[in-house]
Length: 141
Figure (cartoon, helix red, strand yellow):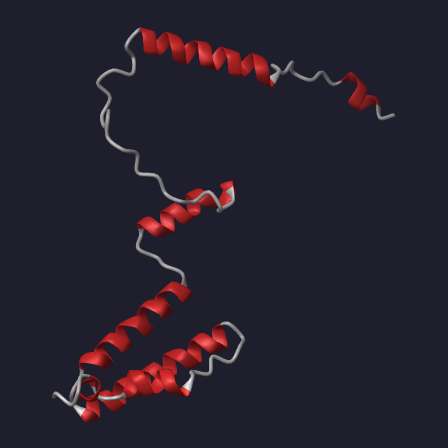
């Protein structure tokens, strides 16, 4: 046995149940003395983030990223796809529609590469996205 280990003293540790009881007693006393009265936000709902699935050691870092406006690349890609699809639905100029179709194809290809799978768009889906808005609405332009 290592002699250094046997001579070292460890600080006494309070068992968790005793610590919990002490904390609960102090909270109860503070509540009874009115320490929690008139706090800002009293009665308002809590703004809880749904970060229960995020490991505890990453929550603070994720919150900083979120508060600075950062979103994961996958979320940004889906947002871009949705935006191009909406623009395509409302665009009537053929040249601009072709540009948007090209951009949509590029975004879909990037998404497929990022997920290391083939994101082949079904022909029917692509056809519905690419067709002119007037053609879908009974021929109105």
